[in-house]
Length: 132
Ligand code: CA
Image 1 (tube, rainbow, N blue to C red):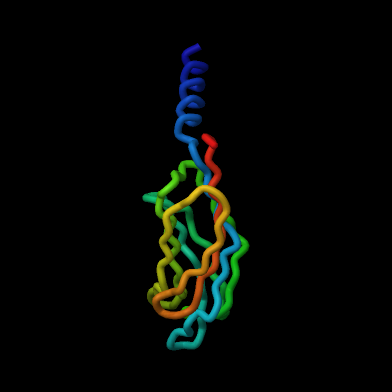
Image 2 (image 1 turned 30 degrees about the horizontal axis):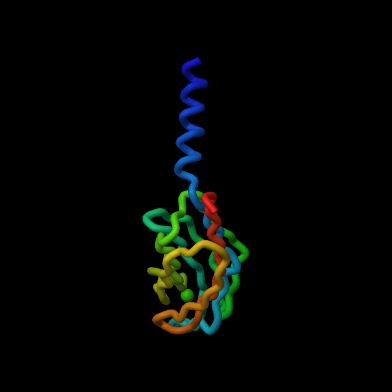
């Protein structure tokens, strides 16, 4: 009985926390800058608020990479900051090409973000809220 009660409380806790879910997809970049060796090996790290959602695979030697990975996070909240860090993988240390930050809004949105060191990151996300 005690374990059933724990499970019920766990489910209730989940329901009260799960106010919104974000799905990030359609990540691609164009005209990324070449490094000193002339090979741009791009990948993206994804954060939502304080949470790390992971990173994409590295696309070797491609200045116009695209990624098939999708990222989901069920504890997202409206106005949380979505943060995308674009890197060029290198032998010694990876080069940060630029950072894209944006506050989440409900619905589906597509954005282009200009990277500090050159190039553009394109991405789309959907934030679905349960109270609408
Ligand atoms: Ca590289």
